Length: 272
Image (tube, rainbow, N blue to C red; front, top):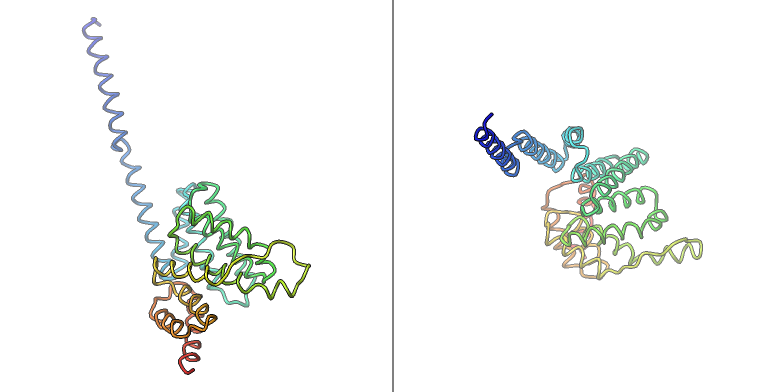
C-alpha cells in the first residue's frame, strides 16, 4: 500500500468514526432502543388508565410486563406501590390479613423505588402511604409509632415536589389526626413510647385546600376538609364541599364508602 493509499484509508476511518459518533449522539444508531422506550411509555400509560378505571388485574398484568423487561425503572415501582394500596383498599375490611399483605407489598415496592432513585418524590409519597395503611390496619397505637417516619417521608416528597396532591392530602390527614390525638395521649399516660404527632386543624385545612386546587376530582380531600369545617361549626361550607364531592368520579374503592358517609352528613346538616 502506497503512502497516498494509506492516507486515504486513515481519512476514511476517521470519517466513519465521526459519523458513527454523530449517529449515536442523535439516537439514530440504536433505533430499537427508541422504539422500545416508546413501547414502554405506551404500556405504562395503558396501565395507568386501567388503574384509574379500577381494573386492577389488567393494570397489574401491564405493570408486571414492564417489570420483567425493565426491573430498574423507579417510576414503575411507585406505581406498583400505588396499585397494591388500591388493591388493599378494595378488600373487605374484615379480611384484615389479606389487606395487610397488599400494604406490605406496597411498602416493599416504594422502598425499591427510593433505593433506585432517592430523588423520586412519588417514591417517598407512596412509601408514606404504605406505612400509613399498615398502621391503620394495626390500630391507633401502631399508627402513632410510625407517625414520625410517615411525616418525614411526606416532608421529603413535598420538598421534591411541592405540588404533589397525594402527599398534600396525606399531610392534611396527618395534621387532622394529630389535632385530635390528645385524648389518646391522656388515655395511655406514660405508657406511650415515642413522640405524639404535632399538628392542628389550620395546617390540615391549608393542605387539603391546596390539594383540591391541584386536583379537584379527589373525593377524600373534600370529605376530610368537610369534616374540619364541621368541627369548626362552618356548616354551610361543609355542605358545599360535600355537594361538590358527590359529583366527582369514583377513582378508588374507598371513595364509595366516603360518598356514603357524606350523603349521611349532607342529610344531617341540611336538616339542621
